[in-house]
Image 1 (tube, helix red, strand yellow):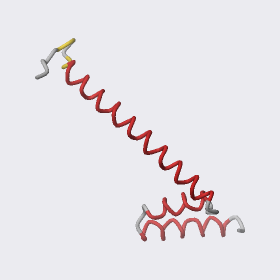
Image 2 (cartoon, one colour; image 1 turned 180 degrees about the vertical axis):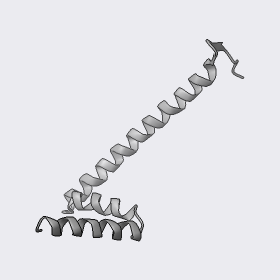
Image 3 (cartoon, rainbow, N blue to C red; image 1 turned 120 degrees about the vertical axis):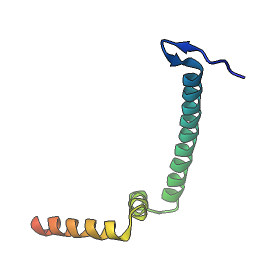
Image 4 (cartoon, rainbow, N blue to C red; image 1 turned 90 degrees about the vertical axis):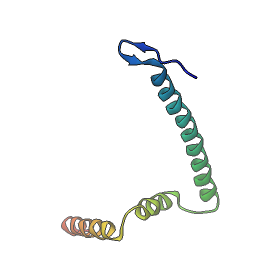
Length: 83
């Protein structure tokens, strides 16, 4: 059982626990980011357009309403500049 130690009004053992948890998650996140990078490389090697894949992933995170609103704004701006 860990002992509570206060330093300057800070629960040092709790702070250390929080820091260690964050560090552990950061390491896991790095591993996941490396895995994602490998999948993008695999997709590129299979002839897929990585930028298109990233764009589709962003779109899939949004609701249809959000996508429709963005499309309308983009269309308006494109029309305004003659595209």
